[in-house]
Image (tube, rainbow, N blue to C red; front, top):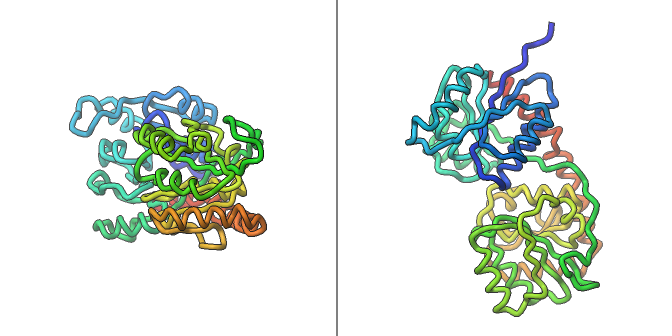
Length: 345
């Protein structure tokens, strides 16, 4: 006689696109391969997300997820959740966590950043994706014996490199790559300023966000228009990573930095600022180079080091790939989630 699968409700409100939204879809789809759990995704209407989950064999239940104070608007979600009779409910990010009540199930929440804990205090268990976030939970008064650290994993689907002349990149240029929401926290302004001291390079900058216009103005002011390519939101991150000579994460604030894991997976040497997540993940001069936050000169020096010393860059990328496979691969992280569900139930 086989054990009855643990019923896990996976809850995400979320935006149409974003790093956390991609992680949710990827993680729920990956966990669907394991017979020890049965999942149902409660999320907002999003055609691409629903199609991916459906293709993975995951049931979906679509809801509005209104703000917490609009209780009637969330009645349908709460009713559907209760009727499914889950053993575990796992919520992602603020909105989903805030509107999900305690019930006849174990309520857990996953924190991918240093969020305001007011949205999470009613939970039974908490997952922090880094040690720093787990420490944030403890400092906020959450019982340490109910906190688990489980990192992310990335899309493990290798993609062929792009033509190096893509996006009107001049022939022979070294390609620098950066990715993320175009927000002040990401520090892309510092990277653009550093570019003035790194000749014969082109920056591919992928992402959308509120800082797009100011960043484009900065590029114009520094006369770098021909050297900075704004790519918008991209779904071919592995292809971009495998094409670039160096990946840069210049963030002022970064919870985990799944982009660090993506660079490791794609054997792309990297430079990152010592913000929260990257500073915890990267072993300086072993799996990447770390520089101080908001330090233009240090950032440009580190990037030039990897461009001018290809053997050193290769060593860092090989070490990073090995580190990813040992600690952050899909198989490793899924097993940690399966162990987590089994323990709390």
